[in-house]
Amino acid sequence: MKEPLESLILDLKKSPSFLWADEIWFMGVWKNSPKSRSIARNMPELQPNYHSVKENLELEDIYGSPYSIFEYLPDPLVSKEKDLTNLYTNIKRLGKKLILDFVPNHIAIDSPLVDTNPNLFLIANESVSSRNSFLHPNGNVYVHGRDPYFDGWTDTIQWDFSNPNVEKKHIEILKSIAKQCDGVRCDMAMLLLPDVFEKTHGKKSFYDWACVIQAVREEYPHFKFYAEAYWGMEDRLLSLGFNASYDKSMYDAFKNQNFNFISQNLRQNSGLRNIRFLENHDEERAKHQFGDNSHIYFSLLCATDCILLFHAGQEMGFTKKIPVQMIHTDEEKPNLNSIEFYERAFAVTAKRQENSMVFWPDYKEYNGRSVFVKSIETENITELFLWNEQTSEVSGWIPFQEGIQFQPSLTDIVTGNTYPQTKSEQGIYFKLAPNQVQWFIF
Image 1 (cartoon, helix red, strand yellow):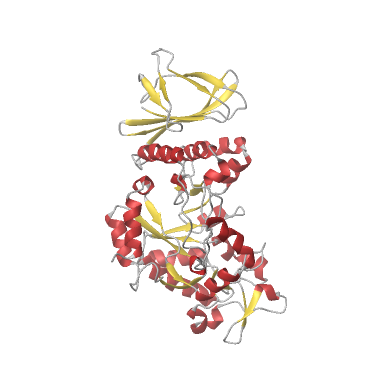
Image 2: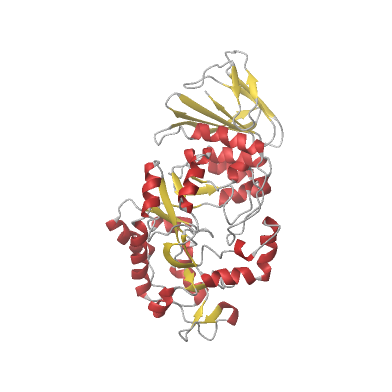
Protein backbone atom coordinates (compact mmCIF):
# COMPACT_ATOMS: atom_id res chain seq x y z
CA MET A 1 0.00 0.00 0.00
CA LYS A 2 1.39 3.40 -1.00
CA GLU A 3 1.98 6.10 1.59
CA PRO A 4 -0.31 9.16 1.20
CA LEU A 5 2.51 11.40 -0.02
CA GLU A 6 3.53 8.84 -2.65
CA SER A 7 -0.03 8.85 -3.98
CA LEU A 8 -0.02 12.66 -3.91
CA ILE A 9 3.20 12.79 -5.95
CA LEU A 10 1.68 10.42 -8.51
CA ASP A 11 -1.35 12.73 -8.80
CA LEU A 12 0.85 15.82 -9.01
CA LYS A 13 2.89 14.36 -11.84
CA LYS A 14 -0.28 14.30 -13.93
CA SER A 15 -0.82 18.03 -13.40
CA PRO A 16 0.51 20.63 -15.90
CA SER A 17 1.35 22.89 -12.94
CA PHE A 18 3.69 20.26 -11.49
CA LEU A 19 5.65 20.09 -14.74
CA TRP A 20 5.93 23.88 -14.79
CA ALA A 21 6.92 24.39 -11.15
CA ASP A 22 10.54 24.54 -9.99
CA GLU A 23 9.68 24.06 -6.32
CA ILE A 24 6.89 22.23 -4.52
CA TRP A 25 5.58 23.54 -1.17
CA PHE A 26 3.75 20.90 0.84
CA MET A 27 1.56 22.47 3.53
CA GLY A 28 0.43 20.48 6.56
CA VAL A 29 3.05 17.74 6.59
CA TRP A 30 4.13 18.31 10.21
CA LYS A 31 2.51 16.48 13.12
CA ASN A 32 -0.93 17.84 13.83
CA SER A 33 -2.02 18.96 17.30
CA PRO A 34 -4.80 16.96 19.00
CA LYS A 35 -5.79 20.09 20.91
CA SER A 36 -5.96 22.13 17.70
CA ARG A 37 -8.17 19.44 16.20
CA SER A 38 -10.54 19.63 19.17
CA ILE A 39 -10.68 23.42 19.05
CA ALA A 40 -11.26 23.45 15.29
CA ARG A 41 -14.12 21.00 15.59
CA ASN A 42 -15.86 23.01 18.31
CA MET A 43 -15.41 26.67 17.28
CA PRO A 44 -18.87 27.94 16.25
CA GLU A 45 -17.46 30.70 14.03
CA LEU A 46 -15.64 28.16 11.84
CA GLN A 47 -18.66 25.94 11.16
CA PRO A 48 -20.14 27.97 8.25
CA ASN A 49 -16.82 27.72 6.39
CA TYR A 50 -16.76 23.95 6.87
CA HIS A 51 -20.33 23.51 5.68
CA SER A 52 -19.67 25.65 2.59
CA VAL A 53 -17.33 22.97 1.22
CA LYS A 54 -18.81 19.80 2.77
CA GLU A 55 -22.55 19.23 2.63
CA ASN A 56 -22.66 16.22 4.97
CA LEU A 57 -20.00 17.37 7.41
CA GLU A 58 -18.51 14.87 9.85
CA LEU A 59 -16.01 15.41 12.67
CA GLU A 60 -13.43 13.32 10.82
CA ASP A 61 -13.42 15.92 8.02
CA ILE A 62 -11.83 18.44 10.40
CA TYR A 63 -8.23 17.76 11.37
CA GLY A 64 -6.91 20.98 12.93
CA SER A 65 -4.72 23.81 11.72
CA PRO A 66 -1.42 23.03 9.96
CA TYR A 67 -0.12 26.21 11.61
CA SER A 68 -0.56 24.83 15.09
CA ILE A 69 2.33 22.39 14.85
CA PHE A 70 2.61 19.71 17.53
CA GLU A 71 6.09 18.57 16.50
CA TYR A 72 8.34 18.97 13.47
CA LEU A 73 7.89 15.31 12.63
CA PRO A 74 5.76 13.82 9.81
CA ASP A 75 2.07 13.64 10.62
CA PRO A 76 0.77 10.03 10.58
CA LEU A 77 -1.67 10.96 7.81
CA VAL A 78 1.31 11.98 5.70
CA SER A 79 3.94 9.36 6.47
CA LYS A 80 4.70 6.59 8.93
CA GLU A 81 8.44 7.28 8.67
CA LYS A 82 10.50 9.19 11.23
CA ASP A 83 11.26 12.01 8.77
CA LEU A 84 10.59 13.17 5.21
CA THR A 85 13.91 12.08 3.70
CA ASN A 86 12.28 9.65 1.25
CA LEU A 87 9.84 12.31 0.09
CA TYR A 88 12.76 14.70 -0.41
CA THR A 89 14.65 12.08 -2.43
CA ASN A 90 11.64 11.43 -4.67
CA ILE A 91 11.07 15.14 -5.27
CA LYS A 92 14.73 15.59 -6.25
CA ARG A 93 14.51 12.67 -8.66
CA LEU A 94 11.71 14.53 -10.40
CA GLY A 95 13.96 17.55 -10.83
CA LYS A 96 12.08 19.67 -8.28
CA LYS A 97 12.99 21.35 -5.01
CA LEU A 98 11.01 20.75 -1.81
CA ILE A 99 9.81 23.62 0.40
CA LEU A 100 8.28 22.98 3.84
CA ASP A 101 6.67 25.15 6.50
CA PHE A 102 8.42 26.69 9.47
CA VAL A 103 6.08 28.52 11.87
CA PRO A 104 8.48 30.69 13.90
CA ASN A 105 6.05 32.79 15.95
CA HIS A 106 4.21 30.01 17.78
CA ILE A 107 3.61 26.30 18.22
CA ALA A 108 0.66 24.16 19.35
CA ILE A 109 -0.49 24.69 22.94
CA ASP A 110 -0.10 20.96 23.63
CA SER A 111 3.32 20.59 21.99
CA PRO A 112 5.77 18.46 24.02
CA LEU A 113 8.27 21.29 23.51
CA VAL A 114 6.37 23.25 26.15
CA ASP A 115 6.92 20.44 28.64
CA THR A 116 10.64 20.13 27.91
CA ASN A 117 11.31 23.88 27.45
CA PRO A 118 8.73 25.73 29.59
CA ASN A 119 10.82 28.91 29.82
CA LEU A 120 11.00 29.43 26.06
CA PHE A 121 7.35 30.46 25.85
CA LEU A 122 5.77 33.78 26.78
CA ILE A 123 4.19 33.87 30.23
CA ALA A 124 1.22 36.23 30.50
CA ASN A 125 1.33 39.24 32.79
CA GLU A 126 -1.66 41.01 34.32
CA SER A 127 -2.19 43.16 31.21
CA VAL A 128 -2.93 40.15 28.97
CA SER A 129 -6.64 39.43 28.57
CA SER A 130 -8.06 36.01 29.31
CA ARG A 131 -8.98 35.50 25.63
CA ASN A 132 -5.30 35.87 24.70
CA SER A 133 -3.89 33.55 27.37
CA PHE A 134 -4.42 30.07 28.84
CA LEU A 135 -3.44 27.93 31.81
CA HIS A 136 -1.03 25.18 30.85
CA PRO A 137 -0.95 21.87 32.78
CA ASN A 138 2.52 22.84 34.04
CA GLY A 139 0.88 25.63 36.08
CA ASN A 140 2.03 28.58 33.96
CA VAL A 141 -0.37 30.98 32.25
CA TYR A 142 0.96 31.49 28.72
CA VAL A 143 0.13 33.87 25.90
CA HIS A 144 -1.44 32.61 22.68
CA GLY A 145 0.43 33.31 19.45
CA ARG A 146 -0.90 36.49 17.87
CA ASP A 147 -0.16 39.54 15.79
CA PRO A 148 -0.63 43.12 17.05
CA TYR A 149 -3.96 43.69 15.28
CA PHE A 150 -6.03 40.67 16.32
CA ASP A 151 -6.71 38.39 19.25
CA GLY A 152 -4.56 35.28 19.62
CA TRP A 153 -4.86 31.97 17.81
CA THR A 154 -6.35 29.87 20.60
CA ASP A 155 -4.67 26.63 19.55
CA THR A 156 -1.16 28.13 19.77
CA ILE A 157 1.40 29.26 22.35
CA GLN A 158 3.71 32.23 21.75
CA TRP A 159 7.49 31.80 21.70
CA ASP A 160 9.16 34.31 24.04
CA PHE A 161 11.63 36.22 21.88
CA SER A 162 12.88 38.15 24.90
CA ASN A 163 14.63 34.89 25.82
CA PRO A 164 17.86 34.50 23.77
CA ASN A 165 17.57 30.73 24.03
CA VAL A 166 14.57 30.75 21.68
CA GLU A 167 16.89 31.73 18.84
CA LYS A 168 19.15 28.75 19.63
CA LYS A 169 16.15 26.41 19.69
CA HIS A 170 14.93 27.69 16.34
CA ILE A 171 18.35 27.08 14.79
CA GLU A 172 18.21 23.52 16.11
CA ILE A 173 14.73 22.98 14.63
CA LEU A 174 15.68 24.55 11.30
CA LYS A 175 18.81 22.43 10.92
CA SER A 176 16.66 19.36 11.46
CA ILE A 177 14.22 20.57 8.78
CA ALA A 178 17.09 21.45 6.41
CA LYS A 179 18.08 17.77 6.22
CA GLN A 180 14.70 17.04 4.66
CA CYS A 181 14.12 19.80 2.11
CA ASP A 182 15.57 22.69 0.12
CA GLY A 183 13.97 25.56 2.02
CA VAL A 184 11.28 26.84 4.34
CA ARG A 185 8.33 29.15 3.98
CA CYS A 186 8.39 31.12 7.23
CA ASP A 187 4.85 31.85 8.38
CA MET A 188 4.23 35.49 9.40
CA ALA A 189 7.99 36.12 9.52
CA MET A 190 7.63 39.81 10.39
CA LEU A 191 6.12 39.02 13.81
CA LEU A 192 9.63 38.23 15.07
CA LEU A 193 11.06 41.64 14.24
CA PRO A 194 11.96 43.41 17.52
CA ASP A 195 9.65 46.41 17.12
CA VAL A 196 6.71 44.20 16.06
CA PHE A 197 7.17 41.82 18.99
CA GLU A 198 7.43 44.75 21.41
CA LYS A 199 4.31 46.37 19.95
CA THR A 200 2.41 43.09 20.28
CA HIS A 201 3.62 41.91 23.69
CA GLY A 202 5.34 44.87 25.37
CA LYS A 203 8.69 43.08 25.73
CA LYS A 204 12.05 43.62 24.07
CA SER A 205 13.03 40.92 21.56
CA PHE A 206 16.54 39.51 21.25
CA TYR A 207 15.69 37.46 18.17
CA ASP A 208 17.81 38.15 15.08
CA TRP A 209 16.69 36.62 11.79
CA ALA A 210 20.11 37.37 10.25
CA CYS A 211 21.90 35.27 12.87
CA VAL A 212 19.41 32.42 12.53
CA ILE A 213 19.67 32.32 8.73
CA GLN A 214 23.46 32.57 8.80
CA ALA A 215 23.74 29.76 11.38
CA VAL A 216 21.66 27.42 9.23
CA ARG A 217 23.49 28.31 6.03
CA GLU A 218 26.86 27.62 7.60
CA GLU A 219 25.83 23.96 7.49
CA TYR A 220 23.37 24.13 4.57
CA PRO A 221 24.70 26.95 2.33
CA HIS A 222 22.00 26.67 -0.35
CA PHE A 223 19.04 26.41 2.00
CA LYS A 224 16.29 28.89 1.11
CA PHE A 225 14.29 31.13 3.39
CA TYR A 226 11.00 32.53 2.08
CA ALA A 227 9.12 35.06 4.21
CA GLU A 228 5.40 35.42 4.47
CA ALA A 229 5.33 39.13 5.26
CA TYR A 230 2.99 42.11 5.16
CA TRP A 231 2.69 45.70 6.43
CA GLY A 232 5.54 47.03 4.26
CA MET A 233 8.17 44.98 6.12
CA GLU A 234 9.20 42.86 3.15
CA ASP A 235 12.42 44.76 2.37
CA ARG A 236 13.56 44.57 6.00
CA LEU A 237 13.32 40.80 5.93
CA LEU A 238 15.14 40.60 2.61
CA SER A 239 17.97 42.66 4.10
CA LEU A 240 18.27 40.09 6.91
CA GLY A 241 18.97 37.25 4.51
CA PHE A 242 15.63 35.97 3.22
CA ASN A 243 15.79 34.83 -0.40
CA ALA A 244 12.37 36.26 -1.20
CA SER A 245 9.30 37.66 0.49
CA TYR A 246 5.57 37.71 -0.14
CA ASP A 247 4.44 40.67 -2.23
CA LYS A 248 0.71 41.03 -1.70
CA SER A 249 0.69 44.49 -3.26
CA MET A 250 0.06 43.17 -6.78
CA TYR A 251 -2.79 40.97 -5.53
CA ASP A 252 -4.38 44.00 -3.83
CA ALA A 253 -3.87 46.09 -6.98
CA PHE A 254 -5.67 43.47 -9.09
CA LYS A 255 -8.44 43.29 -6.50
CA ASN A 256 -8.88 47.08 -6.44
CA GLN A 257 -8.18 47.48 -10.18
CA ASN A 258 -5.35 49.89 -9.39
CA PHE A 259 -3.90 49.84 -12.89
CA ASN A 260 -1.42 52.65 -12.24
CA PHE A 261 0.23 50.59 -9.51
CA ILE A 262 0.26 47.49 -11.75
CA SER A 263 1.87 49.54 -14.53
CA GLN A 264 4.68 50.69 -12.26
CA ASN A 265 5.41 47.18 -11.05
CA LEU A 266 5.44 45.70 -14.55
CA ARG A 267 8.43 47.88 -15.33
CA GLN A 268 10.40 47.05 -12.18
CA ASN A 269 13.04 44.35 -11.83
CA SER A 270 12.94 42.73 -8.38
CA GLY A 271 15.61 40.13 -9.11
CA LEU A 272 13.17 37.32 -8.22
CA ARG A 273 12.83 38.63 -4.68
CA ASN A 274 9.04 39.07 -4.75
CA ILE A 275 6.64 36.16 -4.28
CA ARG A 276 3.40 37.00 -6.07
CA PHE A 277 0.13 35.11 -6.33
CA LEU A 278 -3.51 35.20 -7.39
CA GLU A 279 -4.63 32.86 -4.63
CA ASN A 280 -3.27 30.93 -1.65
CA HIS A 281 -4.72 29.19 1.38
CA ASP A 282 -5.44 32.56 3.07
CA GLU A 283 -7.11 34.27 0.11
CA GLU A 284 -10.24 33.56 -1.88
CA ARG A 285 -9.94 31.34 -4.93
CA ALA A 286 -8.74 33.37 -7.93
CA LYS A 287 -11.71 32.32 -10.06
CA HIS A 288 -14.09 33.43 -7.30
CA GLN A 289 -12.28 36.71 -6.59
CA PHE A 290 -11.48 37.82 -10.14
CA GLY A 291 -13.76 35.78 -12.40
CA ASP A 292 -12.55 35.62 -16.02
CA ASN A 293 -10.05 38.38 -15.21
CA SER A 294 -8.09 35.75 -13.27
CA HIS A 295 -6.62 34.56 -16.57
CA ILE A 296 -5.68 38.12 -17.52
CA TYR A 297 -4.03 38.78 -14.17
CA PHE A 298 -2.16 35.47 -14.15
CA SER A 299 -0.79 36.35 -17.59
CA LEU A 300 0.42 39.70 -16.25
CA LEU A 301 2.13 37.92 -13.36
CA CYS A 302 3.85 35.71 -15.94
CA ALA A 303 5.13 38.92 -17.54
CA THR A 304 6.59 40.25 -14.28
CA ASP A 305 9.93 39.54 -12.68
CA CYS A 306 8.87 37.49 -9.66
CA ILE A 307 8.60 34.11 -7.99
CA LEU A 308 5.10 32.94 -8.85
CA LEU A 309 3.22 31.10 -6.10
CA PHE A 310 0.60 28.78 -7.57
CA HIS A 311 -2.07 27.18 -5.39
CA ALA A 312 -3.31 23.62 -5.85
CA GLY A 313 -6.65 23.64 -7.67
CA GLN A 314 -6.12 27.07 -9.21
CA GLU A 315 -5.62 25.47 -12.62
CA MET A 316 -8.99 23.74 -12.24
CA GLY A 317 -10.81 27.04 -11.83
CA PHE A 318 -12.15 26.05 -8.41
CA THR A 319 -14.11 28.78 -6.62
CA LYS A 320 -14.55 27.39 -3.10
CA LYS A 321 -11.93 28.32 -0.52
CA ILE A 322 -11.06 25.31 1.64
CA PRO A 323 -10.51 25.95 5.37
CA VAL A 324 -6.99 24.88 6.34
CA GLN A 325 -8.40 22.73 9.15
CA MET A 326 -10.18 20.38 6.74
CA ILE A 327 -8.88 17.19 5.14
CA HIS A 328 -12.08 16.04 3.38
CA THR A 329 -14.35 18.20 1.21
CA ASP A 330 -16.95 17.66 -1.48
CA GLU A 331 -15.59 17.49 -5.02
CA GLU A 332 -15.97 20.67 -7.03
CA LYS A 333 -16.66 20.59 -10.75
CA PRO A 334 -13.61 21.85 -12.69
CA ASN A 335 -13.90 24.82 -15.02
CA LEU A 336 -12.93 23.65 -18.52
CA ASN A 337 -12.04 27.18 -19.65
CA SER A 338 -9.54 27.54 -16.79
CA ILE A 339 -8.02 24.11 -17.40
CA GLU A 340 -7.41 24.95 -21.05
CA PHE A 341 -5.96 28.37 -20.22
CA TYR A 342 -3.48 27.08 -17.65
CA GLU A 343 -2.44 24.21 -19.93
CA ARG A 344 -1.55 26.79 -22.60
CA ALA A 345 0.21 29.05 -20.10
CA PHE A 346 2.23 26.26 -18.48
CA ALA A 347 3.26 24.86 -21.86
CA VAL A 348 4.95 28.20 -22.53
CA THR A 349 6.43 29.11 -19.15
CA ALA A 350 7.80 25.59 -18.60
CA LYS A 351 10.21 26.24 -21.47
CA ARG A 352 11.69 29.34 -19.87
CA GLN A 353 15.23 29.24 -18.57
CA GLU A 354 17.11 31.27 -15.99
CA ASN A 355 18.96 33.08 -18.75
CA SER A 356 15.84 33.99 -20.72
CA MET A 357 16.32 37.34 -22.42
CA VAL A 358 13.82 40.14 -21.77
CA PHE A 359 13.27 42.89 -24.33
CA TRP A 360 11.05 45.97 -24.49
CA PRO A 361 9.78 46.03 -20.89
CA ASP A 362 8.22 49.40 -21.60
CA TYR A 363 5.17 51.31 -22.76
CA LYS A 364 4.47 52.44 -26.30
CA GLU A 365 2.19 55.30 -27.21
CA TYR A 366 -0.69 54.78 -29.65
CA ASN A 367 -2.68 57.94 -30.39
CA GLY A 368 -1.73 59.32 -27.00
CA ARG A 369 -2.69 56.12 -25.13
CA SER A 370 -0.06 53.82 -23.69
CA VAL A 371 0.09 50.05 -24.13
CA PHE A 372 2.42 47.81 -22.15
CA VAL A 373 4.63 45.75 -24.45
CA LYS A 374 7.07 43.11 -23.24
CA SER A 375 9.05 40.38 -24.97
CA ILE A 376 10.70 37.34 -23.36
CA GLU A 377 13.03 35.17 -25.44
CA THR A 378 14.03 31.59 -24.61
CA GLU A 379 16.06 29.58 -27.14
CA ASN A 380 13.91 29.55 -30.29
CA ILE A 381 10.75 30.89 -28.65
CA THR A 382 9.77 34.53 -28.15
CA GLU A 383 6.81 35.53 -25.98
CA LEU A 384 5.06 38.83 -26.65
CA PHE A 385 2.79 40.42 -24.02
CA LEU A 386 0.43 43.33 -24.73
CA TRP A 387 -1.75 44.98 -22.07
CA ASN A 388 -4.19 47.85 -22.44
CA GLU A 389 -4.58 49.60 -19.11
CA GLN A 390 -6.81 52.26 -20.65
CA THR A 391 -10.58 52.62 -20.26
CA SER A 392 -11.07 52.67 -24.02
CA GLU A 393 -10.03 50.48 -26.95
CA VAL A 394 -6.47 50.83 -28.28
CA SER A 395 -5.11 49.58 -31.60
CA GLY A 396 -1.86 49.87 -33.51
CA TRP A 397 1.13 48.06 -34.94
CA ILE A 398 4.06 46.26 -33.29
CA PRO A 399 7.10 46.61 -35.58
CA PHE A 400 9.00 43.46 -36.55
CA GLN A 401 12.12 43.07 -34.42
CA GLU A 402 14.55 40.34 -33.44
CA GLY A 403 12.49 37.28 -32.48
CA ILE A 404 9.24 38.86 -33.70
CA GLN A 405 8.70 37.92 -37.33
CA PHE A 406 5.66 37.46 -39.54
CA GLN A 407 3.49 34.39 -38.96
CA PRO A 408 0.33 33.53 -40.94
CA SER A 409 -1.65 33.33 -37.70
CA LEU A 410 -1.16 34.03 -33.99
CA THR A 411 -2.85 32.22 -31.11
CA ASP A 412 -3.53 34.19 -27.94
CA ILE A 413 -2.48 32.20 -24.85
CA VAL A 414 -5.02 34.08 -22.71
CA THR A 415 -8.17 33.27 -24.68
CA GLY A 416 -7.08 30.52 -27.07
CA ASN A 417 -8.36 32.61 -29.98
CA THR A 418 -6.41 32.48 -33.25
CA TYR A 419 -5.94 35.64 -35.33
CA PRO A 420 -5.05 35.36 -39.05
CA GLN A 421 -2.30 37.82 -40.00
CA THR A 422 -1.95 39.87 -43.17
CA LYS A 423 1.67 40.47 -44.07
CA SER A 424 2.58 44.12 -43.74
CA GLU A 425 5.80 46.09 -43.48
CA GLN A 426 4.28 47.91 -40.49
CA GLY A 427 4.53 44.74 -38.40
CA ILE A 428 1.82 43.02 -36.36
CA TYR A 429 -1.58 44.64 -35.96
CA PHE A 430 -3.34 44.50 -32.59
CA LYS A 431 -6.61 45.75 -31.12
CA LEU A 432 -7.15 45.62 -27.36
CA ALA A 433 -10.30 46.23 -25.31
CA PRO A 434 -9.91 47.96 -21.91
CA ASN A 435 -7.83 45.83 -19.49
CA GLN A 436 -7.28 43.21 -22.19
CA VAL A 437 -4.06 41.18 -22.28
CA GLN A 438 -2.78 39.31 -25.30
CA TRP A 439 0.07 36.82 -25.03
CA PHE A 440 1.55 35.47 -28.26
CA ILE A 441 4.31 32.98 -29.10
CA PHE A 442 6.71 33.34 -32.04
